[in-house]
Image 1 (cartoon, one colour):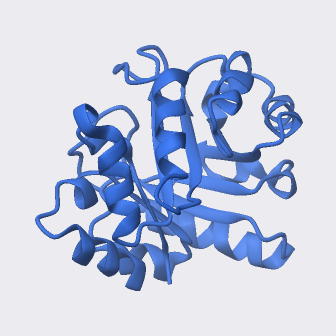
Image 2 (cartoon, one colour):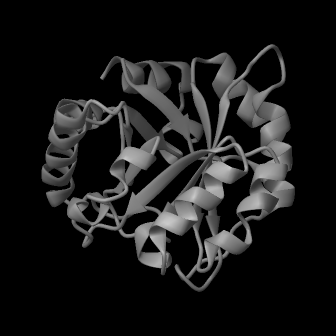
Length: 220
């Protein structure tokens, strides 16, 4: 079974708490928070204040969903503690945004959060060779970060397969998460390639039947 992590960017921010609780009630596993700064990616989204609200919702109504924060920002080390204080339990930074990636990973771990690294479509999995054993998660972007509604990049599946083989060889328990163009009708391709966690925003929050959409992703 795949873990389903709905991205709150597709939620109704006028009723963010209720929207998050609703998808958790319907079977979602994690709460995915996409943070964009207008520099690493063109768009600007949210910061620690909204993350704190999402984190409260993740623990409401009897739930204890992991708060999964994806930092698509430059100089992420400067803000890691702020997002941890806001309730982030897993913090993912981009390899491309970190001058000293090992240092950034250790900065995340020093806060007590789990550490993830994200790879853009052009970035080979080999950049993680010397830090993979320090990670809890690798996030593979299957579209270029910063915009919704993009077409899936097919080479993402090869990257996931290679990454999964290396993780299995090392037996280090690192999870593979995938974000970008994930829908119920292609989810199985991602899990068969080796992904454990599926991020989906509009595929969950905009679905006419959220329960069925989440179940289809999880069943992949």
